[in-house]
Amino acid sequence: MINVGIIGSSFSEGDQNNPIEGNPNSKFLTDIFKEYNTNKEINFYSRARGGFGSEQFLSDVIYLKQKYNISILLIEIIENRSKNQLKNQHTVYKEIIKKSNYDRNLFLDLFKEKRLGLYENHWPKFTPKNERLFFTIHDIVQTLNLCNLLNIKTITWLYRQLPENIEVFDSMKLVDVKWGLSSDWTGGIGFFEYFFKKYNGKEELFTVDSDHLNDECNVELVKDFLLPKIYERT
Image (cartoon, rainbow, N blue to C red; front, side):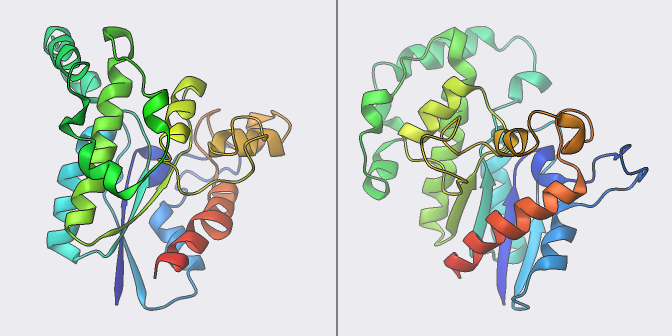
């Protein structure tokens, strides 16, 4: 059997209230994976949780490896949301960011061995204004490093981010699942943008709350983009 882990936010969790279809119990993303998966040797296990972000990733990987011995991990590139749960972190964040600007190799060395590119030229100088971006990248890169040590194949994708963040993720070659060429709007990376473009900006046609996808679009996301990439990794 092939066990696939899923980590991310509510965008990877699914089961959002769906007032458009009058369905108060929309589907979890894992249920959609199971329904449309054609490889019966694959199991899906999720640690994606609404309201949380990349700050949970390392713990999630350890749990999924220990509990289910996953060999593939689907990673949603979502921001570090630790400041949403904790208070009075600003001084600590500023000190860590200050140190990181002098020594950026603290967490990039292993990453650079696996993903070569020119991303260092685009590496931002972190300040308290973009501290969340620093910790998001730190979480994701360290998660990739940990998966490398544990022999877990990784697949990264992105639903929604600020355009400036998307540019950094793209320049670092962090995003595996894309929907178009670099000429496509935001680089063919974020899937909110994909559906926004497909439905001519009419968010009521593809979301349940102007943010989360409805079931129909989650099915398209899974069937046409995420499952094919998982099959490539098996």
